[in-house]
Length: 380
Image (cartoon, rainbow, N blue to C red; front, side, top):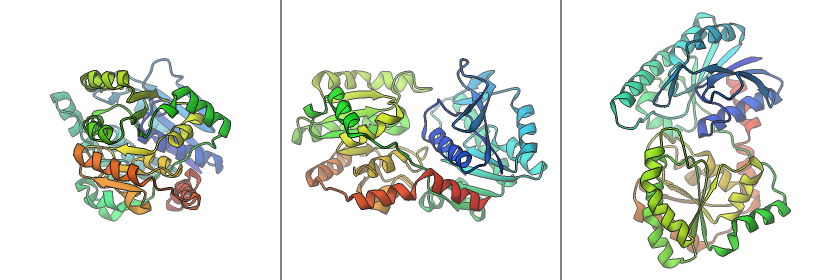
């Protein structure tokens, strides 16, 4: 089968959306399908065409950016030719080009499957407001011209005003999660490098440093946690400097974080190599996910923590609360409530519950990219 995947950003850009798309695309390639990804050349130094893990990647030059959206003049010519060759078109939303891509798919008689990651909630500002309207308009066109809309959970679908418009087309497929095997010697080396033995407990946070992730909620919760656990620290894994569109947010919180770093209560891990990510989860005692809005619809990192036996304190948002409630590995707290987050973390840390290897293995199987890719194939 020839599968065309279209999305605004792809590797090496890091977000839940790009990680999801890459994992499924590479799983399709392993299964013997011919997979092409059509995306933006969001960094000028990236090659316009390459094959990565069996997936052909076509990157279109960017003329200008509107908020996090891109304007790519050559995109439509390329898109039309690739859609003609494809059997199935998989479009990831939100995406400014989604409406026209779906119309081209319908025009050429192709099956069009949308993967709907989240409801878009842009920061304030005139340009962002216009970009938001443009994306919503394109979403509506895409919905009218697609055959199915895949989203991560029924919980999220039930609480989305946008998905309510296409309820009959919605299909639920859980997101893909995988981590490399961790060598014990590599784990010991990682622990020594980050001096993990100095901290007890370690609270993990794994995401881009972005306003919708609720970093300040965790910052406000820490004093209460430190009062009971004075050697506690936060390990933050993910990009934190020069994150697209988030510079002002980082600068606003940086003085508080710098103070915590000096006191030994915060470490920035940065974007870790794939082989070191499992070591991060093995090091932490609990993962915090204090997301603030619906731009997070599930939280792949929650499953990454759980397959390493680590519980999660997650915001009570549609979709975000699903991993904790489904697998009973953690606590859910009210959105934006730092005091409640502190209480949730403290309950988890006091309990020190050990989750069974058997349950962790079952979670790993359920979310494996090959399993998720097969569910898509059945839908195709």
